[in-house]
Image (cartoon, rainbow, N blue to C red; front, side):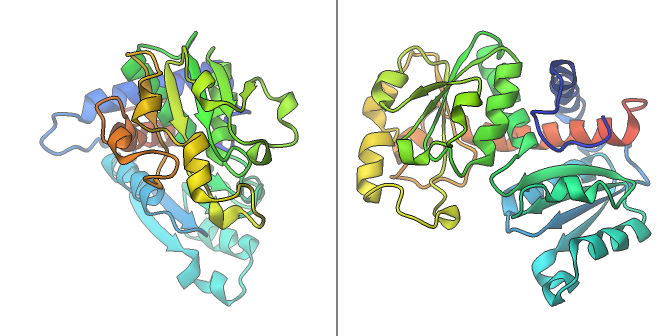
Length: 306
């Protein structure tokens, strides 16, 4: 595995290896007085973000530093990119700097793939358009593994704005590959046209879709990616597709509530549900660091040394 661009391209064996190494990273660092490992000492990891994302960028930065790598944060809005420099020019600059890995978030689908053509180091996709966000799906799978004991055979409902969600796409391919049964639930206007080709069950009634689930993943309504009215009002959306306490009670007692963040409290998820013990939202943030440590370690060392 030279790069991590999509979960669709990952084999089940590669995905399971990442989850196993994630567990090792969490065990190795937790409880240490100084939570660092020397595995990537002398390596340089560049965070190249063309979209704002405090959560994901900070998670990757923390992961790299805990592996003792040198980290360069490259904010495109304040760089030469803002003056017209192309992605290729930026890539050549990073190559000249000796970047061992580049973590890229970009509004255009396919940008991370193009980057692999121009640099010799590893490329990690931290989100490209509505296409993919592989480490988010991996941390979601790891969270399910920790809370539910595994992914295989579990039923997972992904609810909301599927159309604009790279998180949903990455989770569909990863979770189905790991043996989960995936339900996609949302208004018809927020489901992709090619959804018949996906390994999923489709539902439009949230109440009915919550029965028998092991996990429900609520997606943020991404108004910044929408250029049309996909539903009448925010109140109407919350009434039909928001997860409130009444709907939480429809789920099996062991079922967990997930959200990739940031949340629209009161819209796709009620505050009482987001703050309940059944919600894994803060755990997902913590697990994201371990997953990104595992991915960086595997890509930059080929698993050779810890």
